[in-house]
Structures are given as C-alpha cells and as structure tokens.
Length: 360
Image 1 (tube, one colour):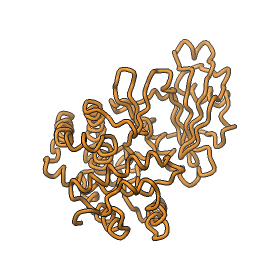
Image 2 (cartoon, helix red, strand yellow):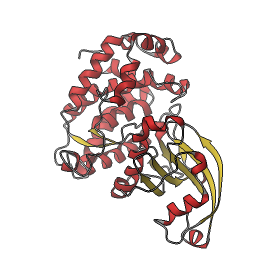
Image 3 (tube, one colour):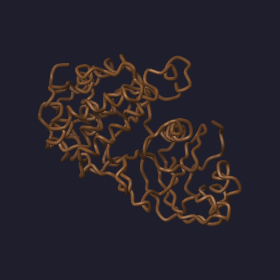
Image 4 (tube, one colour):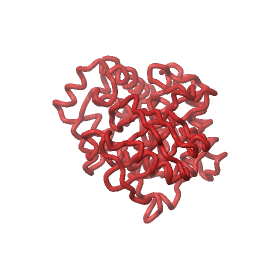
C-alpha cells in the first residue's frame, strides 16, 4: 500500500482531509461540509459523521452518513496493528471476496495508523447483531456459509506461507510469546484471574472451567493443535458484536481488526458457540457443521476436513472463546455481554468434554 498522511487525533479529521482521501478513488470529489455527530470510543474509534459533497460527489451517489474508523485514542500506539490490519483487509482482500461487507469508500494504512471510511449502516435499515439476541438456524447457516467463502478463498494457499503476498497477516495464536501476548498471559496471573472469577460472568460457568492452571495448559495445547493447519485467512473475532444483518436479512461482517492467518475452526467454533442459544446449538450443530464442510467443497476446497476431524478441531478450539470471554475487560465489552457469552463456551466444553473440562 502507499503511505499517505493519516489523522491521529479526532480534530485531524477535517472536510479537507476527507475530501482528499475520497478523491483518490472518486475523481473530483470534494467534501464541502463535515459534521461529526457522535464519537464512539473503543479499541478503534468510530466517528459518525454527516457530510455534504460537491456536485461530483452527489453525482457518484456517495453516502452522506459515514463512519470514520481509526486509532484516535491514547492507546493507539499499543494496538495500531489492529487498525493497519483492518485497513489493509478492506483495501487488498475485500475486493477478492463475495462476503456481506459494508460499503467502504476509503481504506489506507501507514507506519502509524490505519483508517477506514465506510457507510453508516443505520440509515440502510441494517441491524447490528447483539449477543443477547441469539441467531436463528437460518441466520447461523448464512453466516457460516460466508465464513466458508472466506476460508476457501485462501485455503492452504502459498500466499500465506514463506514469502507469500499475505504473510503481512499475523498468525493466529491463542497465547503468543510476542509482545501482543502480554494481555493473555497477564490475565492468567493468579491475582488477576481471581478478580475475574468474582464477576457476574463467572456465576454461570461450570466449576471445571474456573481452574487457572488447567486453563493455561488447555491454551498451550491449542497452540500446538493450530500449528498443524490447514491455514487460511480467518476473521479472528467472529462474534455477534462484529456482525450485522441487512434490511433483507443478509449477513454482514463489520470489524476486521483481527484478520489473521489461522485454522478455520477458530472462526467456526467461536461463531457458532457465541451466536447460538446453548439448547439451539446442541440441536443444530451437527447439521450446521456438515453444511459448512459442504460449502468448502462447493467453493473449490479439494480436501475439506472429514466430519470426524472437523469435530476434533472444534473441540480443541472451544477453550479460546471460553478464556477470552472469561477475562474480557469491561472496558472492551460490557459485563452483560461477557455474562451472556462466557457460559455458552463453558457448557459447550462440558457437552464435548473439551479442554479445560475434559482431558488435554
């Protein structure tokens, strides 16, 4: 990618900057007025804005309600790789995919920042998904079909290994040794772990899930499992808060800050358990996974996993979602979201006798 100047603070997002950015893709466009209507702070800052274009912008039908997403808060430097990854996903990978995605008008990254300018979905009638509203069977099947399309596109592709063109994507690792693994290791410290076990989210968890040493061992076992492949491009954080349904009911994926090279079962396990009521998951999971595997074959994967090996992989990956929803800071997810989601993973581990409940 080229390395344009990108805003680092909310006040850097001006009509002049936005117009210049959009003009790189939409010739002769200028933004005559920019009104920021709301700023949503989080891992990535979202500036919701209303804009007025010149005649060229109106003629090209550009949306007037936008979401400008970037690292604009004090913690930007700590997680700037998230913003850079998302910008590169939309600039380089999204055009090669047929998934449900928002309309992106601009995406760019440099050494310090990543910025995505997309349509504000709210005026389109889209519904942002919430963990308190589990999906229907048909909705879950549609999202899994899109995940199959993503995974199949670069299934065991040379682009993901060696000096391939996509090695800039970080490799998914549940507990990496590098600096970005400091968070997970820190949450496993005895006093930190004890704190999270006092929060409401822990009340609905099976007791077998609450042992810190067993959890650590299960995460290490998953690290070894995931290294065996197959490797594909994965979403990396496929929970409902990062997804939406269009007015017509089509699935869509919003947040791509954690796009990774990794094992397909990371996305499928994390999505299916977090998105479904546990009783529905028990009733539907076998058919949903069979449909996902069939979708891989339909999209050209010559050697999709067998159902037996697929369920071995799913069993191994349950611990990832379990751990990270158990120790999710309330600054990242409201406690009501953590309390709704963590027990879904705990009872899935019980159902499948999976680590850390079952043998490693």
